[in-house]
Image 1 (cartoon, rainbow, N blue to C red):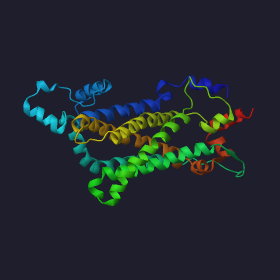
Image 2: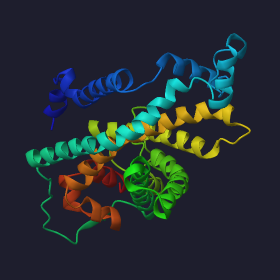
Image 3: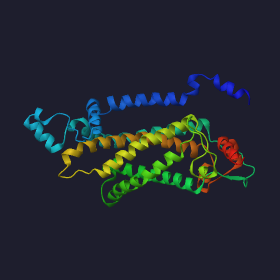
Image 4: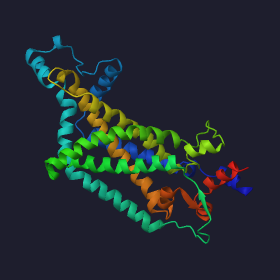
Amino acid sequence: MVGTPHMETNKSFFSQNKAYILVGLGFMALTYWYFWLATIFDLNYVYQFILRIFQGDISGQLEPLENMNRYQQMEAGVFGPRYDTIAPEIIRAFEERQELLPYVFAVEFILFTIAFIIWGRKKASITRENDTVQVYSLFQRTVLLLNILIMIYLFITGFSITFGNITGGGSIAYFMRWTHEIIGLGWMPIWLILTVIAFKDHKFFKRPSGKLWNRIFLRGTYKPMYRLNYYAYVAFGFLLVLSGFLLWFIFPTAENYVEVIQFRRLMLFVHFMGSAIISFFIFETIYSYVISVKGYLPGLISGRLPREYLEQIRPDVLEEMEQEDK
């Protein structure tokens, strides 16, 4: 045990930060492909538009109308400003997503399957089944399970919207679209609560040891990839919450169409981008916690896990619980 810290300090920078470096490089490649190769998206216009939004102007009309000819003024008055900067991407992507997304998720499924075949499934050796420990309180289980169920439903209804040309219209499609918005509003407080209670091991954050505290906040520390999953959930979840609420709250009418339509185009783009990125980290979390490790889901439902499971799979949680009893 004495040599362990010394061994940790001798690790290379890449070994200690491998998960962050690989994910960062992947996102750099994805960003380049998405914004410069795969989309019709005027980045300079969007940057200026966002600056205007922070100044209180959400119209997107950056060029003064007096500098435009009469036809351009008429076009801006009917369709809104700079229709060619964002809207073609949405219209084109609506068709392309239906063709390309199945391949994207197929690749993710294949990657996780390969990982499962190579590394297998962790399974604790349980000899004392009745020796269990209460790990999750009723409040924690409610938040975690609601988050899982709501996100599954949002993904299903979101796919129904994305693949609208395939699934067709009718009452079922209308119901899924309507409930996507309502359930999405319900997910907002769940996202916020989970963001708070899952904040674990920042270097400036010292957890109190009170038992009431641990009925609210989740125990343990994050491994690098789990920490990335948490940060991605917080960051892109925030984009989904913000863009989803604004899409629901700001609805174009005959009176305000020109003033709000460009802002809604931008929020729709942000919403799709956030959902596409967060889905990978959600799938990775499901794989890491549920598929690759046997016994986690029953423990999450009941709140109790075998002590031997914690000793072998989550010793950080068991150590924290033992410190509480001192």
